Length: 350
Image (cartoon, rainbow, N blue to C red):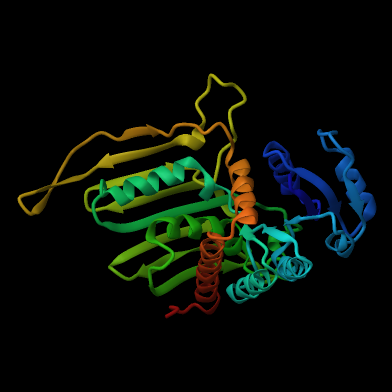
């Protein structure tokens, strides 16, 4: 059993605490810059398995030798430095996205290597069985040669006091927030090692410099393109698709949907669609008219948040895949940075 400490009392801290306990591990301590807030967080927890230690500063938690791993759901302007400090103290770190820059992801990774601790970013959907099945189908050639990956994640967030509208706390705005998921979806199919040729993004900024809307195109080598759309100024949309020469894979709410409360309802997190559009005949491709197929992936009986915790525990116990997950976090943030730079400067990057 791994003893976790949590830095901060953000809403997502509760959900990840649930996942930690569901995976069979312990939420040992919680830290806030306000001790009263930490105590309130504990009193609101439904689990009473064990008393959770409360700290009134982040330093106190990472100095606690009983804490083995730290979950960090802080704003990106704060998370990078606290991730490095925790790793320096020999703590394995699970850091919520985004980061403040790809350069800082590399700095965090270097500290983790030096201290032989695990580092994982908090993107949940990449650990679920649906994404893995979609990747398997892509690799099998069922959609032919990949040509495009398109994805969108937008939401209606109008509260100007939301930290997403504070460039000091979240400098990349919507690109770092919902845009991170869009970029991660794209890279999950294009590949993390595929060269980026160019990035062109168009964004909108509020009066205080927060980016609240962004869309554009990424050109990869091998004539593959990706169209992305993210923002806080329109209705809720969350979808992704992979277009090949022979078929299309499409998924709604790729980042995750609420799990049904009844076992009689199908879990939308296990669903995606496939449609064949072409067939190879005598050395060329002919158009095919076919109905869209609904595909339901077999359940593993655990939500993707728990699967993420289990992957993190595997990285703690075994170091052979640590570099893979570091690369994925770095490349995601690298492309997020490029998109933000293009939108900010109104220029094509690379």
